[in-house]
Length: 360
Image 1 (cartoon, one colour):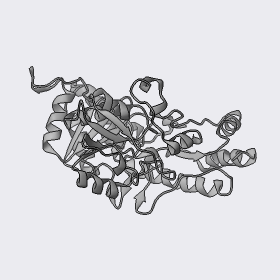
Image 2 (tube, one colour):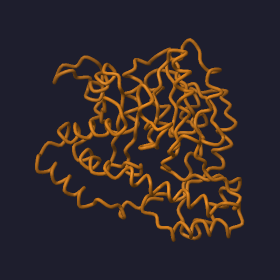
Image 3 (spheres, one colour):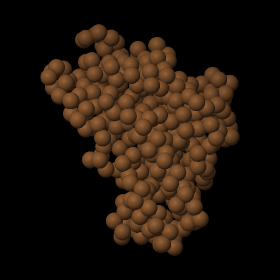
Image 4 (tube, one colour):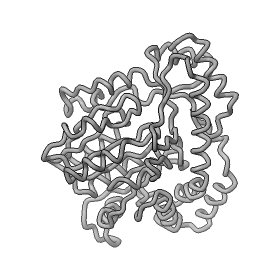
């Protein structure tokens, strides 16, 4: 699916790691501060708060906004459970909205029907790297005076009407896991906001709830990004746009070579910039197609086979939730290999295997 051994910038990354080792400060130093500032500037927001993971970024974002028991947050179920876990772990209730069958992001035409007097936030997911329909989401959020906390874990560098994903929400959360478009060499995450008060609370929450050392003003967690990951990310951030452009070229070639094959290929809506964290096709015969690819040594994955509302962990929390588009899509999606170092010959072999299989 992704071969990080092919990644460029390895000498620069090694030098950055050595810089941290030489300095002998491994948590909360110049590298973290530098990366926070550089990533915030890249996206176009005032504050970056580096944390241990995308999951922690989401949890801290909900907590920093003061959302808790008795509150509701609108989101989607075709996502990694961390999105919804962040709501539940803060004591709030997730309210699911079905998805657009083309972009797989939240269906904005259904959102207002799900808003109640207890709704405090909307949590869209920019799934696979395609931005959610942020102009409508922002209009609805402003109308109902609720927050937008988006999960941008798949969307580093994606754009909506010329603005970077992460600059259009009250709080935006990114995973920087090794498989992501902007990737660390371990767990890492980032929370972005223009709200100074939210930024201050988030910084305390990630650091045991401390305002100053040993002065704990709230119940917090230990979610500090380490200096080595920050140093690696500072180097790799400089290449993000180049790597995203490579992903987009490969996605265009996939589209071309899979045209007429019978599988459903991704779309890119007008005025958006899809960054193809994943290249996801759909097939009504997914398991047969996946088996055919695997017999040829081609790895695939499914993101995500079981929607959150169908997960056993949520049986006692979510009842009588019906999301027909989400359930249909989850039974058909298949992620093909996608990374900036995938060769055209490799991509051609993948598409040849799909076409020759006769499975659509």
